[in-house]
Image (cartoon, rainbow, N blue to C red; front, side, top):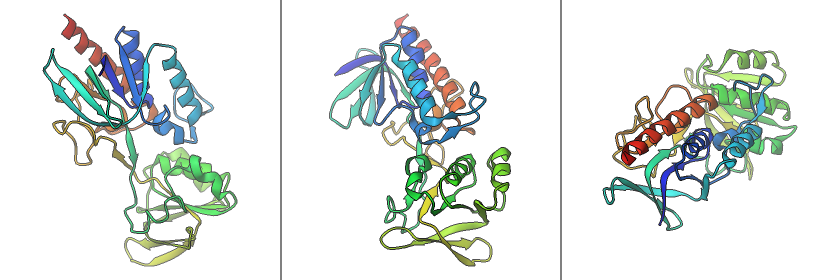
Length: 312
């Protein structure tokens, strides 16, 4: 069984920054990630609101910079999935992480920074058309729909940002939103409304059903007040209606909100001593790259203080 002072689970902005702070403080640190480092940043076409990049930065470029910075220090990278965790009082408080591959890892402090995944639409045809028209990543799959008509579902920044990205490569984008107003940033709305020939707003509507054989060809929307249905010819449907936390492996004793996000105090401490949470996995108002980076620094600082107390 490998043993560390601290283990960070998740290599998005929060996890990478936490690992950086921990190893710089002199603690033996492991960073566990099941995919490539960067988290959701990798699936973001361009980030325009991260301080220090006035002209914006590609998501993958920022992720590469984050990862390269962490690589400059002796952070031990481990690839795999954590399936469960438990705590033991053997030799002092220790946390055991059980990996899907069968290996166990123990640490005196754990930072959970596994973020959140895309919330599905929840309609019956969604699974059938996954990979055949339904996508949750415009940057990953947008090029398959070059010159075609597509739809984006959602009303927040993610939906608006990706609709703008898609508008540069597809023929037309329909933005489907269940409300009349949008909660996304005004600058994105202004850009979208300046190009009605490329982007059409379909408001107060929800996706009712999908159709096409074998790939998606038609999106049927339903007006939330009148119930009237409308067919939209679209070969791609990109879903951005929120997130669900990647916290299945976290101890059941941890407090969660109604959506399942982990509850911490302002120092990122959970109710279990030695277990911290940072980034989009937390119950909080704002989920941005800048807040994830800040969470990572705070969680690591709290973990450092916790470890120093154990060593005293």
